[in-house]
Image (cartoon, rainbow, N blue to C red; front, side, top):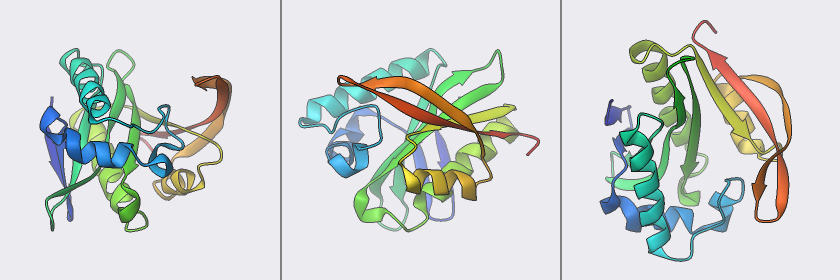
Length: 176
């Protein structure tokens, strides 16, 4: 499976443990994790554990997560990837996060566009999915910009702590 992708301003490399300190800075920000299915991290060991979990899933061809580097600074500014890969049904779910200091610069659009192009052209997937908290307006705008289709609301779909949350399902097909 591919371990790196390049865009005009970004370099996406398969996440590894050496990225833990940088990713901890991203994942420890409550504003970044607000709409994720994790609470913000308080210890770098949580980032190491998350990276190891994602790498284990990658070994099983069930997921792959990339650290996003800004080429200009070689700084990790977030992560993105295929949260789940289903080769039997030729589909994947995408996920992404960007450090707050880099919001509004088009980095998420650029990174996700790269994931989509790779999924449809190289991996020959048919469907990409994204599940989004209905109040995550910025993520919804990103998906709309990338021509994802809103399919509906998954009611009480995910539990974070003691609270069940609805998620909105978006998809994009290879034929879209």
